[in-house]
Image (cartoon, rainbow over all chains, first blue to last red; front, side, top):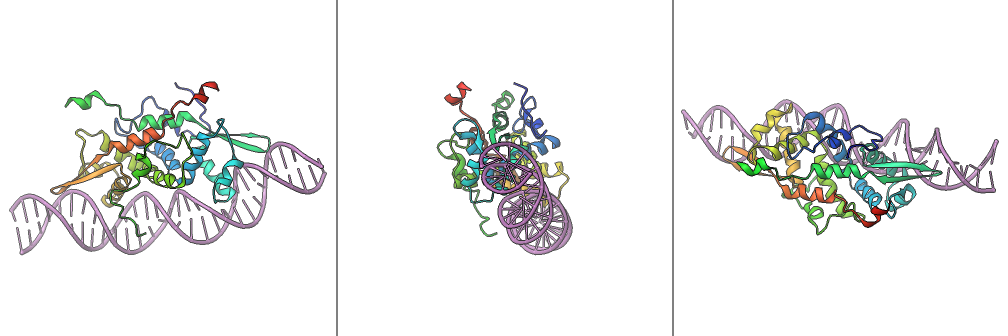
Length: 127
Length: 127
DNA sequence: AAGCTGTATCGAAGTTCATCTATGCAGCGT
DNA sequence: ACGCTGCATAGATGAACTTCGATACAGCTT
């Protein structure tokens, strides 16, 4: 439960650290900056739909050429959003011949889910 | 510029809907817009730290007067960030006398966690 | 080699955002 | 009633973001 492709960024630090915080102990400044970058990547409707399409496609790869026509946006714009998702560590890309395929990095969404999950901590029940 | 008064917000629609999507089926446009607003609220280091402080305090309420001094920002700026978190449905506020207290709305973070959780789909066993 | 197609990068334009100071409002104490 | 303190709102400013068209790059195909 430790190693994974870190790909383009380092910001998975805050996400992959031993234990999720946020709802358990006060986030430190550095952690907050890293985490915010991931959430910011999710903070756009286009990117959310892209991520959703990538996560839910048949097989676990999608060709950019299948993503782009689903939006009313230019190809460079889609490319830009994919780049942000990639830099956030949410997806990875592979070029195969002419086409580029994107796939979800489930470890990252798993970490986010964990961070947002409040484990009913005993201390809380106490006092 | 004019529709700021959403009350505490309606965007829980996408979050509270019957079943989380995102990683399970392609997000529709409207859902993506609502969800993005919540993630966007989390996409700032100051707001993440605020949320974390609110979520992890003793008791489950924090006075604004305890939050503000923790940052190197003006009081109006903190107030603004708290407002965004509130409009995203992540926290709620109560005025008691002179002071205003904020508390986490755990249902919202729960929904986000669920949305980011992939139910191990059968196809996955194969790969 | 030359041309074609798919994708990424560049630079510009308009919009949104984070932050500040100044100000308003609410409740408390004298 | 008056002033003080805590918090919110208003307006301004500079930075960041989204989007575009133009262009560069990569890999086929002929």
